[in-house]
Length: 316
Image (cartoon, rainbow, N blue to C red; front, side, top):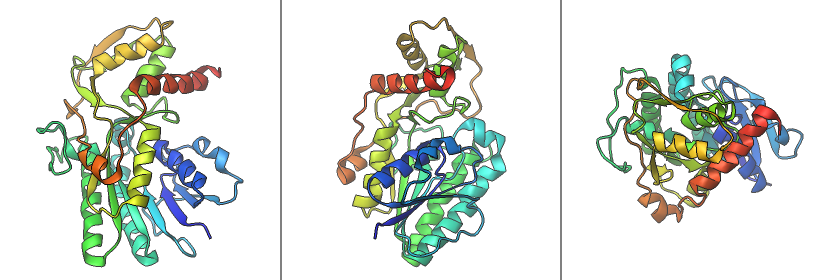
């Protein structure tokens, strides 16, 4: 019998790619999503296949999965500022109640659970690059606090279940990830820039564009998550991301270079509240534990993302 895995947030960007990977590896995949930010289009190709099932369900409620369950990946959560600022209470609930329900299910089934945390737990960091040992610089009552604190609470609850009940857990702190299946309306920098460039709209850079980010292509992120869950027994948080840092302004110019027909210009808007000035992971632990590091160059990743968004916009 194939191993059974439950993936919450299955219709989302990363969740849908995880459904693909685990299905391709021979697992029986059970997807679950309330579709508040995910879309069935991301997993439509899996419907009708053996070893895949999907449930339209809100994981802040009691979760029932019949029969055995080997693994849980808890990826249900808004992940972009546009989403968690629009639905702040739901963001807090899925990080707290949803995590509680998933951990309870893992305990009942004797399953290993991997929880999707985020680099946002580091806030606007005073340490650079960010190591897992850094406790962060988060404004708990700022507008971004609903996401940051939901994920920090998630980590705390996971460790409590691990220490009190012996639940087998993994925690991945995901740094900026991009690629096909992101939404054009996502609000994050890559779909913003590519969508604007393809439609000849101004590229909106916040602040002076000197703030930095580190972009990891989705294929690399999925590989790291798979290795952490299947080949590791390490219960503490692990950073996954690309340590190659780039300023937002430089990134905007890169996108324009890859879309030479674009007539877009760059415009500057006020910096959002509590927007981190720097973001770059220290992935020493992932290299040591998982023998993992990103393989896809930013140039290749941007080109593949442009091809996807061009098709989404123009159908070509």
